[in-house]
Structures are given as structure tokens and as C-alpha cells.
Image 1 (cartoon, rainbow, N blue to C red):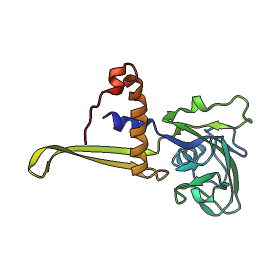
Image 2 (cartoon, rainbow, N blue to C red; image 1 turned 30 degrees about the vertical axis):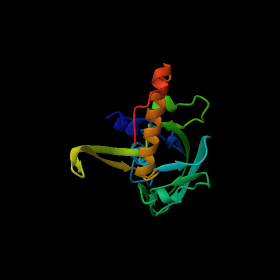
Image 3 (cartoon, rainbow, N blue to C red; image 1 turned 60 degrees about the horizontal axis):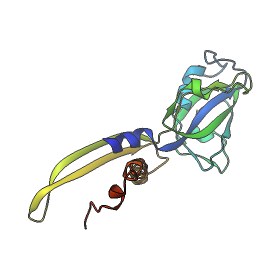
Length: 202
């Protein structure tokens, strides 16, 4: 259960932290020629699966003209940012209309509400959004009796891990185990006996 919690809440990832749409001042606005309102667009933006190869905050852009069904693949990025789900739907824009937007992407862990992403120095009209950084969407596990040769006194652990595509399940599991071990090492280092006693044999 501890490993499951780490998988779901403690792995690093990247997410959009804010968006600025030209001509939009608040999240309750509507945009001429765009089917979705700003709130729905923000909700769709939060569904982006983003991979960042740098530690610094990055800016990505949208510049589209209708008619078009706009997806994540239309977002303009550089080599530092990868959109893993390019077919993810964002909004539909009608003929004769255009939309320009900039978004910030940052790396972090867990979940940060929009309030935590607010930046007082950001340009007017910048909308902070909730950021879900964890790349793991779902974890299930099952423990079953297992037999090794004639010995039936074993358990078999099966773990099902579903990610957003920015990390493969095997890497997510290995990284989670490392996080858990490093936290537990704080306790094993408390005494010399805990550090030197052999507890597992081949």
C-alpha cells in the first residue's frame, strides 16, 4: 500500500501551470468563434500529457485559425517539451476566427491547485490552472498464494500500473521503490545494528 501511495502521489512530472489567451481576461469569458468557453478549454488543457526535459519553467504556444478542430498536436513547442498525447482534443474554432495563447509548463510532484500557481508578476489575463504532475493515473495490486517447487509458502504480487504515457510502468515502479527506500533509509541509519545486520539471504 505504501508503494501504491508513492506511485500515485510522489513521482515527478510536468504539467501546465498557467494559460494566457489573447483577448481573455478571466476564466468566465467566451471567445468569438470558439465552441467551448474558457472554463472548458482550461479543463481540456489540464488533460495534456507533457514531458519536460529541463528543470526550468518553459513556455509553449498556440496560434490557430479556423475552421479547425484543435488538438494538443497543434501546440508549438521546442525540443525541451514533448506532448505525449497529440490527439488530445482542446477546442473547435470556426472559419474566419483565430486564437493565440501561451502556456507555462513546470516540473513538480503531486497536485498543485490553481491558487498555488498564481504569479503576481504575470501579465494581466494570465489564468493559473490546477496542475496534476503525477504521471501515474491508476494503480491496482493483488496478492495470491504461490508455489515454488514443492514449497507452497509463498505469495505472488501482481501490480497493474496505468500512466499518462510520459513514463512507462516499469520505470514508474522502479522510481517509486527508490523513493520509498530512500525515505526508509532515514530510519535504518538511526542505529549501527540496523545498518550492519543482515536481514535477507540469497
